[in-house]
Image 1 (cartoon, one colour):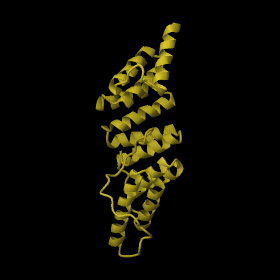
Image 2 (image 1 turned 30 degrees about the vertical axis):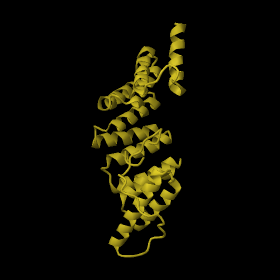
Image 3 (image 1 turned 180 degrees about the vertical axis):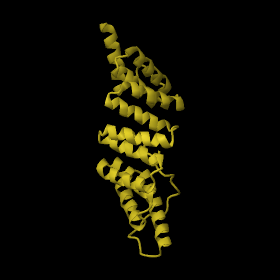
Image 4 (image 1 turned 45 degrees about the vertical axis):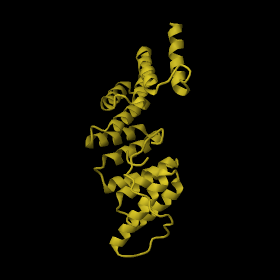
Length: 230
């Protein structure tokens, strides 16, 4: 992805370069090339801050970079990801759309927009973004997975299974993808199929009966209880 999915969500980010010295203040005026170089430096500093979880500080530097060089699509994209992680999805959407206006063929930017729309529960729009991304790169496993998530939320379990299977073809040992498949089967009342997927997650993660916890344990307990009731 292009910067750091979080949990709930992995984002796509430009590759980080080596951090530079802190202390970037207001950018001085200068020749266009000087301004672009200054913007690049600010972006590098912002990426370093973002990797340390200093999102507010990172946003400030991304904005300085954008002020110096508004045509830098990557700066808008990186700012969008930081804003998303600050739980400011509306502001993040604005920046991601600006990035896409500048670079409409960047599949990872379409994925990032889809993730931001998912955060706002705008699943039909997220579906469109993920499909745009797959039109650019059909082999993006994460995008197929997120499209599967979106279909799951929309209640279209047949398409959710189809997209998640594509993701698993690309990354067959992803516990995250496998658990989503289990969730889809569970919602479809295919309890035996769901349990098979959850057992695969347990195996991949190396869980023991004593260490299974959280939502996964709750789902397994539900299936066991339902099976005893039948």
